[in-house]
Image (cartoon, rainbow, N blue to C red; front, side, top):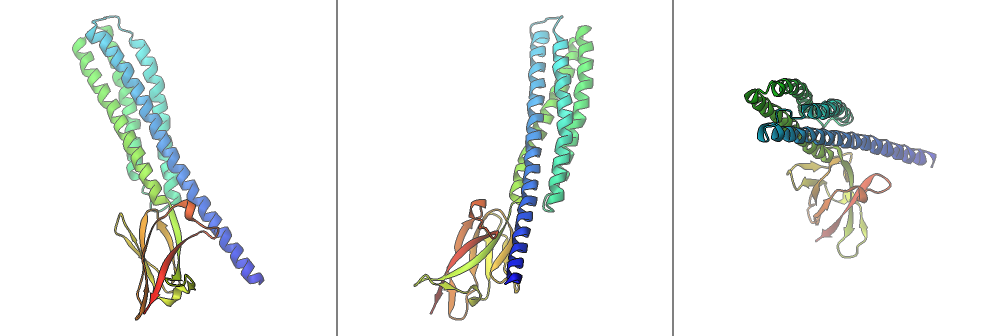
Length: 266
């Protein structure tokens, strides 16, 4: 009895540890997403300020356009962009350490590009100040185009980072599933080992997972998604299929989602 209790306790501790590790990865991905959103917001702030300056100088022909206000806002926002680019790199790297299915390379590359563009925005903005002070409209117009292009690139890359980090959340969520059989007529429980084995087909990707000799009735670490669960038929018996969308609300206290198939026999 003590051995059984110990085994159950060990299983529960392992389940809790796995859930905590999974939650840590999800938290890191949320931080990656939120950091990218801050980058997007700050880049749009600078873009809006640049538009105000552009209208004042090029459209209204104000040779005394308030470039200092633009520079002050730009400097503060680009400082935030630099800080949160580093946050993106850190958090997606942390998520990748916690889950081998997450490749951080694309997001980290995009964050590095955003950070590099921040330097260009600063340098070009300093040149723009000089051009406006000298009333060199052609140079100012070209610099404004270049700055806007760098800001648009930051916004685009931040949106891509958000999309990729959100997609990684589905990779990070994994589930354990156990098959249970019930007689289709009486509803009585039937041992899962009555049938040769089981398969789970991801309805979005077409990937198929199988039970094995040692885990004849269960699947470990299925990625999040919707699956059709099927049984291998015996000579004169089999089971119906069931389609289930894996969700945290379905996980039992033992860490498994139970999928019930209806057993039939001739």
